[in-house]
Image 1 (spheres, one colour):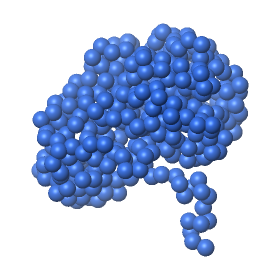
Image 2 (cartoon, rainbow, N blue to C red):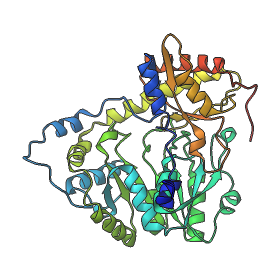
Image 3 (cartoon, helix red, strand yellow):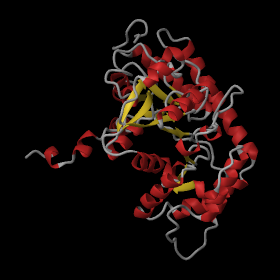
Length: 407
C-alpha cells in the first residue's frame, strides 16, 4: 500500500497554496544573499492603530481564559458599532466571531453544504476557497471572468448556466482578491435576483470593504432588500487594521437557523482567540483619519504599480478599483516558470521579487498560466524598486513571448 493510499480523498485533493508554495525557493535565494521584495502575500506593512496595540499591551490578567464560543461580548459590541458606523444595522446576535476569516468561510460552507454540494465562484478567486471547499467536500463551480473586462461579472445567462441541482450558494469577494475588482450595484443586485429566484444563499467576503479608490463606494450585500435569510457576510480585522496575526474574523447573518448551526460548530472548536479579541475591542477607538490615510496610501501604491507596468510591451493590467492586489497578464510562456526564475535565476544588483502565479486562483485547468498576482503592500520606496526589478526580470526572462495570450 502506498503512503498516499493511506490518506483520505480529502487529504489527497487538498491543493497547495500558490501564495506560499515558492517559500523554499525564497529561502534558498535569501541564503544566497539576495534581497527579496515580497509582493506575493497580502501582508500589510502599515502600522496597526495605536489604540488596539495599547489595549494589547495593557492586558494584565493572571492568565488568558477561554471565552464564549460566539465571541467576547465586548468585542461583539465593538463589531456592532463598527458596522453601524459603516451604515449597516446589525444586532449582536447576528454576529459570530471566528478564528480569522478563514474559519468564517469554513463554518459557512459547512453550515450550508453537504459533501458533494456545489458553490458558484467567480474565477480568478481567493485561492484558499479551493482549500476550504476541499476540506468540506464541497465542489467550487467556476464562472470565468476576463482580464479584458476588468474581471467584472459576465452576463446573468452565463452565471445561471453554471447552476445545477446541487448548487447551494454563490460566493463572491468584493473588493476582490486577487483582482482588485469592485462589483457595481448592478452586479450585486443581479446576483441577489438570482439567489432570490433560485433559493440560493449569497455569501460575500467583504474583508476589503474600506479599500475602494477613485471615489468609488463599496456596496455591502447587507443592504440588499428581501434577502435577509439568504445572506452571509464573512469578514476579518486582518487587512483593515494590519492585524493578520491576531486571527480574528467574524460572520454576519440574520438567519437564526444558520447562526445556530454555526454556534454548534464554534462550540466544537471551543472559542476564538481571547487575547486578540481583547485587543480588537478597541477598534471603536480608532480615529476615522486612520482609515482615510490607509486608503490614500494604498491608492498611491496602486498607481505606482500600474504606472510601472503601463509602458511594458505585452502586459495587460487594468487599474484595480479596490483591495490591494493587481493581476496582470504577462507575455510569458508560464507564470510559474517566471516566478521561479525570479527567485532562482534572476537578481538586479542582488535584489529580486516574489509574486504569486495566478493559475492556483482558478478552478478551470489551464487558465491563469500567463497571469500573476501582485500585492502592493510595500512602502513607496521599496515598491518602486520592486517594480524596477520586476520589469527588468520580465525583459530578461527566457520564456518571454510576443504579445499577450488571449483566451
